[in-house]
Length: 442
Picture 1 (cartoon, rainbow, N blue to C red):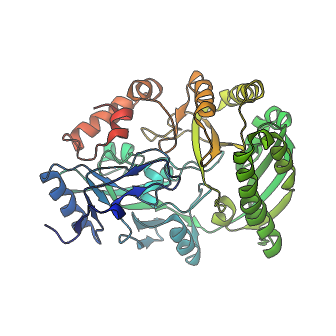
Picture 2 (picture 1 turned 90 degrees about the horizontal axis):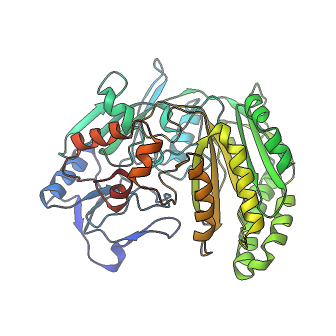
């Protein structure tokens, strides 16, 4: 047996995700240090009849990475392979955390065009589940991919791009771990630029009334609505000629750490202990964040620390349906006994051409709902999901939902194209698990 595979049966072998919603105990773990070692581990597992999954930092709320077979940990496969300034691309190992990639690119005077709102995930985990930020013209992290290298179920190494294996490239950019194990990603990059962020409280009704204009007038627009209140916090990010003017050390700490994490943690803990107090807490919380403007390099503007643990469900809607759906969510919360301590997050994305992207083929608005970890969430998520599915919503692949393959075949016009490719690349379902069986069928 290869030295990169370690058989573990002890209690310490149990794996849990970040939110604590999923746990599994793999029969084996492997920490390959190269593509060749990873391919060998996959071949040996397949010969032994074991399923294979790769896990990054565990930021998915679903069981997309869980396995009782071989668990691949890619933490030794990190770093930048090459930067091509003529093509303006960077090729990076799959286990590299987004934070490490962003800081390395900044040192080279380069940047991704868009980002999600956290950067703890590995690059492969982020793209495989469709991680995205908000953007009028710039799309998800996966939409910035120009090439992929992956190990397939028979242990072979496949490279793909728009010109090489284009049918695999079309699907594997958001592949759910079902088509192979990504070992390297080539991203498009551009010279580092500055973004000016304008954060501003705004009434809920005004945000919804002006949503189309706010989307059209800003490169990146998002907002947070605090349930049980009529209050929102908006954020507009636009490119700037400078100069850089990052948040002051004290002011930034107050907003990003004290209020958004420390005080919010206390508020959530109080709400969990005394649910009846949540509406009053929400009113205080929604007024605590004040307007501010700052200018910095992209990843420092796009991302924020998220230290308060939660569970999350997010649906991608046709953008034109978002306002109606949000009004329905607010009405549902107001007439129900639910007590919701976390704000509802709304972002946008342009249409893209990735087979199972939540923005595939349509202009998109994302509605994300959260609950503090340890707080009952199913009633709230079920009620919101009912609204989202009535509008043709597509759930985020890495966040809680109850949809199955039959539903996805209806909301993704190219769903059969993806499953046919899976049949070709993984006919024995080496990369199968219970989650993929539910969402893709068998």
